[in-house]
Image 1 (spheres, rainbow, N blue to C red):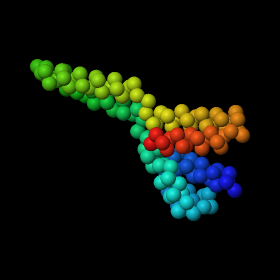
Image 2 (cartoon, rainbow, N blue to C red; image 1 turned 120 degrees about the horizontal axis):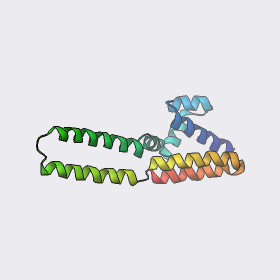
Image 3 (cartoon, one colour; image 1 turned 90 degrees about the vertical axis):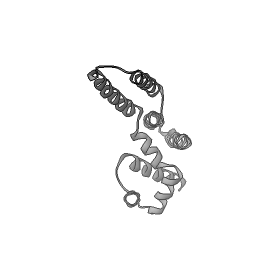
Image 4 (cartoon, rainbow, N blue to C red; image 1 turned 180 degrees about the vertical axis):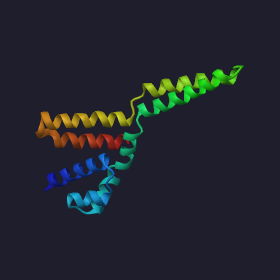
Length: 142
């Protein structure tokens, strides 16, 4: 019975992370109560994890480069470059360097998800435990 419940929880989390289904819809699909799905989602911080997956370092880095590029284009149109402009360029460069060098939660989730899928194929008898450990790790880091 414990394995069935754990499998239902993992499947519910999978639906939550990879779809736009509500907790009620997920509960209906899995023939469990919506209250149970709500409890799992709150307990394991599914909303925070899902947000972290969407706000990736790559997306932030891309946006930062776009802002930097627009600033530089505006600067190129000016007749005179001021000390404040040079300071802004230095700050943007430092921020971009920090963004590019960090591993964030989204990257960790992607790597762990890939690893759990690999374990499911290569070592099916260890898949449930691996998925549970990955979920606990993500919950602690969220």
